[in-house]
Amino acid sequence: MELVTGSAGYIGNVLVRELLKRGRKVKAFIRPTSDISSLEGLGADKVVGDIENVDSLIRAFKGVDAVYHLAGMISIMPGDWALIRRVNLDGTKNVINACLKCGVGRLVYTSSIHALKEPPLGTVIDENMPLIPAPGGENMTGQRLLPVWR
Image (cartoon, rainbow, N blue to C red; front, top):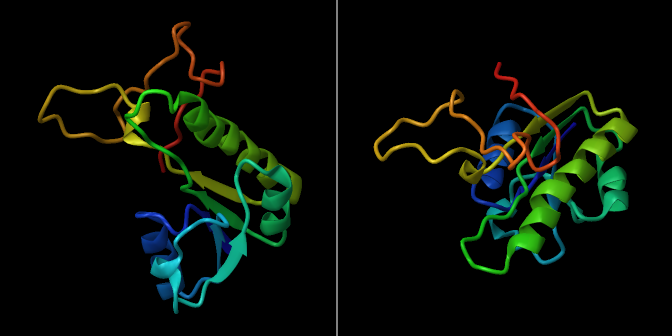
């Protein structure tokens, strides 16, 4: 069983479709307020929860072999920083902790382009692009994390 957070989003519903097409059993993790029309008729099990709520993640992750964490928020609006931090940073920590608690064997995390340094116009963006460091040289969690590319 595989679970996709952000499954009703632009990338998430495409991943759900692809996993189902490959014969995988899929749980689509959705917020109570999500528009799930992109998931209708696909055959994925819908699980309602919120990445800001660890208990809902733990309930959803039981019996799951792999989690694809695509849920996130981007905004260019001033004043959204606290919400973006809660969803993107704290929510990701919650997902990681729920995976560990539930014995999930594989976590695939997809971030936003806003985690990368902005390259010169016309530059091809790939996995070699540097991340934006925090003022002390570490990422927002205070840790030096290196991406694993396979």
